[in-house]
Amino acid sequence: MEIAVLLKQVPATESLIEIADGDIAIKAEGINWVMNPYDELAVEEALQIRDEAGGSVTVFTLGPEKSVEALRTALAMGADTAVRIDPGDRLLDGLGTAKVLAGELKKGTFDLIVAGHRAVDDDNFQVGPAVAELMNIPHISMVIRQEVVDGKIRCTRTVDGGTLVLEAALPALITTQRGLNEPRYASLPGIMKAKKKPIDTRPLSETGTDPGDPLVKTIAMRLPPQRTAGRIIEGDTAADKAAALVKALREEAKVI
Image (cartoon, rainbow, N blue to C red; front, side, top):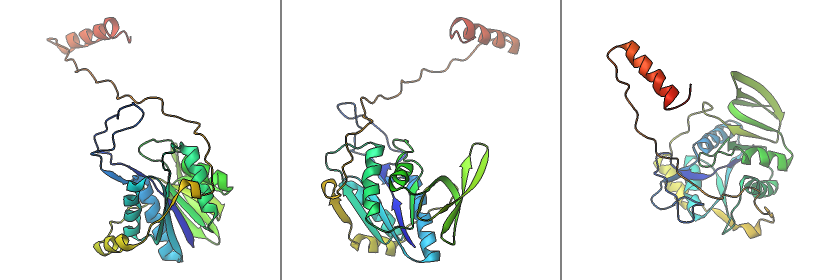
């Protein structure tokens, strides 16, 4: 089975985020960049399917030179090949990214495409479903369990208050949710092998896909307002404190 995995490099969640000059991007310096956690689930699931059914796993990313690190991580985990598309100075939104990736994927013959259901930096939930739509293949999102049988994939996905079981014919695209698996750690031999594997890198201009002008643009970034310190309600008894709290909520906060 030929499997493609879509991944993105994002700031680690513990990184201190600062806004760069111009207020439309974050400062890249001093940030620990990692593979998007949901994409780690995608890589792991693809590897498990390949190990059971045979075939190969190719990882794709659309990103700058530093995103090679995320591809190397996937290769160290066990992916077979990696492709990086360099956007250059083009700023792409989720739909533009999906157009480019879908164009690249159409050049191959993939039975299954796996992606994280969202990236933890922009949270737009768009790229995976848009790629499936542009490729005219079925898409199942938020998958926590899957089984490939007789040319079909049967998935359990999360919904509000429960789960739903869906089935789609291959080729198809699925997006991963927490609970699907526990991503493996890259072994030392795997890391050493990954350093020697070539990364197929090509500029956006050579992909043959024009993503067009972005429909969504970042106008400005602002840090959330600093929260004020809490206030302790004083009183001799619980009833006095309750009365003082109600008075403060009514007369000062004006919420009741």
